[in-house]
Image (cartoon, rainbow, N blue to C red; front, side):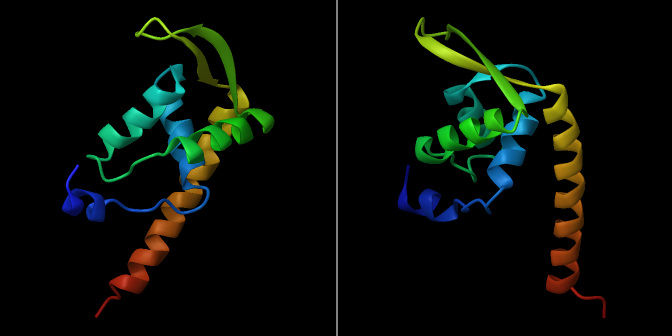
Length: 115
């Protein structure tokens, strides 16, 4: 990755990673590396999820009951935990998406006020 590509990446706001993980798992169960890669891919490589941020977030979401996990084998034939959205997590995803939409609209009004 070039220096320019690295500079184009954006740091995630606190709590945003949780929302992105929940949204990614809406598509189906996935292991940690696949979740990180999906977020990177779907953001056109603007968002990069480091392991040091991903796994604490996954543990936090498990603790809250928003996701669960099962042991399995990855496509590389390695042991992996596969994370899955719970019904409580689906409800939280809807609530968090609504909050995000309100926040984004409010910021847009400040950045681009009507003239």
